[in-house]
Length: 542
Image (cartoon, rainbow, N blue to C red; front, side):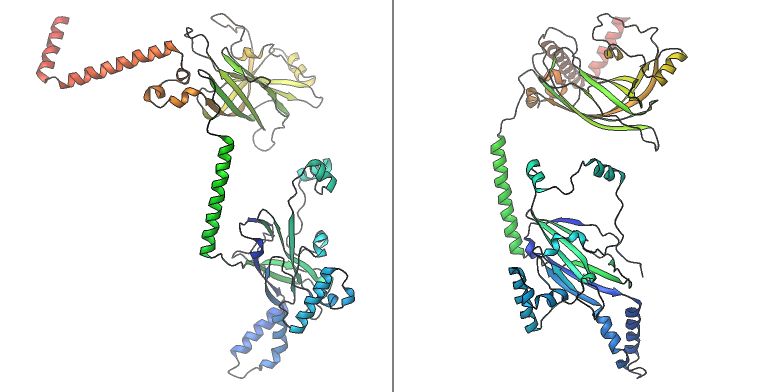
């Protein structure tokens, strides 16, 4: 019998452009008990044997009526009030009605009793105006499975009070929290015995609907959508099982209304787009002529392969000559301390973002040396229990000269001091040989010679660090880079003013044009003339 149940009882969020007053939900509940199933089975047998006169229908008339009362279906609209048997008995007496809402309920119930047109017996609703919505957390819930246990992170948040689950009105005013008004509606079910309806302990929540002014509708649980029924189990001595079906019964919008609504939204979006264009304008911010603007949005993804745990990375960006940065813009940073994962490889995932904005401007055009790109130097360190650090590795990364997305993995090394004493010192009291100048990882900035010798310097290969870079290059000359000549040049050539590189390119291009013309002229000459000229060339060379 448990086969076909829908166990996904979580809430679903919908966004609707239509008014929430047009929402309709068809709710159907059905008791699943052995007595009802037996009576239904016997009733089917009676119908099949009626012609033969074996069993009379009167024998099972009472059981059939009981079985039909255990199922009910009702279409509920948004904030539509259906009274329970408890409310009918309560509000029939005028002396029990104290508030204007209760007196209105008394009038509606009396009119319903006179007309004898009550549509519901077990299914009823609590609207946003009822007192039930104020203490809904105390209501009984039927949804299976039971409440989930909080995770370790959730328990830490509760202990450290990082998240305020129930903010007070003063907290909301002081913190400037955006609080969107939400209306709530509950579809309830009176799942008591057939002759004992109207008891508060038999009321259960079947569905909760919340809607705000932005068109966001939250439904818990979600519509069945051709899935199995939800399993509902009552409390008490007789634990009965019910089936719950939820279906969206809202009527579809007419074609004329849909077209009119789409036309209205298109007009609204067009006006909003024109408004945004008027705020932004047509002129974009451009760097001065001859200046390249480089924006790097990067991320330190992970580090792996290191000897000790609790890793963190210290990095900074070194700018070569002719490069500058935005004033008061930091070019260095330190990541958080990260423990390596115990499952699989020892990898520390940092996911640490960083951003740099630099400018290149070559003032001396007579200098024919190739420009250098910024270099990102970094070192990996580990932290022990006593807050002492060890150097785990040094590395560097040259910023790519091409724009776009780049994923790069950099190997690292650390200085090695020979002897057992150095390793014992590193293990027990921390500390290790360090570089006085971190640029020594590549070529020191103070080095002016031709050859850099590192003879006698001992290192040990350690782990690796993974980076992701998103490079953006911005220059005024890129707008004019539409011809083939501009596309075949480098980024720095397009900046203008580099006369030597431009002259070399012009000479190569002129040589290529002359070579093409010579090949075309040779193809148009007669074959005999080409052979004669080839023989004369061979005789002259002999």
